[in-house]
Image 1: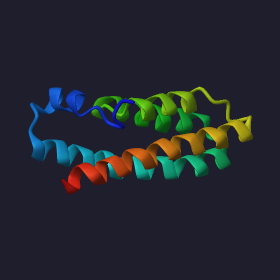
Image 2: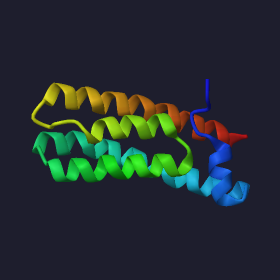
Image 3: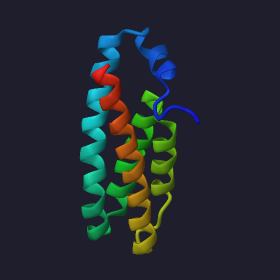
Length: 112
């Protein structure tokens, strides 16, 4: 099984600087918390434009830090039709599951 976050991928962008890695991971953790929380309200408002923007942002940020499973879950969300509320809600749930795993991984990394 691959790591929740590919730290080698992240290190290619940070030169392996542990302090910079930690700062990026903290920012990523805060950003994903905020953005995933917004998706329920966006779904309730049926705001397709904001849905695409938020899911695309999560996807790009996740790819940037090496959280590839989370990026894939965000890509799946990005393609969801908000008219299918059940499918959209399930996509948020899947995204939240991946986000929780990433956040646990980040907390573990930062405590070492």
